[in-house]
Length: 111
Length: 117
Image (cartoon, rainbow over all chains, first blue to last red; front, side, top):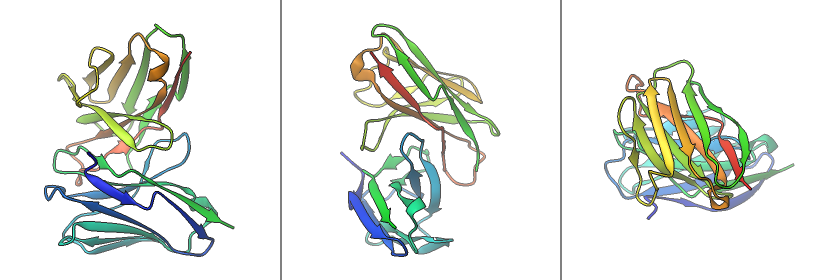
């Protein structure tokens, strides 16, 4: 049973466009929500993360929006570039640090 | 971010043999290390959690006698796949975190591609 639901499964966006990935969770004990970027054959790399006391966090072209009441959060990739083509995972963790991953979204940015 | 090094990056072994994968935290002391398994085009599946000096805690359905985890020091954890079979072929990834981190973030190794022939 997946504790974090992620959509869409895949996404194709043109260069310069916006990629949007959505995640939802049920466990209110989760208090840290990271996003990871994974390239083929590599381990996941932390991209950006947010805590539930903040509704939005922006780092460069990456923005997390967080809706605590709806138990949803999303990743926006602005001005998408071909180098952003990767698989993105949302995750959630409680104070014990055990990550629960979403199913992943494969993003393809076309030139 | 903190650096986690995993070795080897890939390994091929014969069916029935054992393979050891190392996970090291290079610039911090890892209070907790996690081991994941990832099949192609799928998410990461947590196999076990280990704290330094303690026995690992395995997730439901993971055979602890087959996947031996040792976390003997604050910078090193090992995963040994015993009597490997072709169905054990997968991408194995470790992550590590420290109680000293402000957030409960974990940093990942680069993964190990295991192929059992």
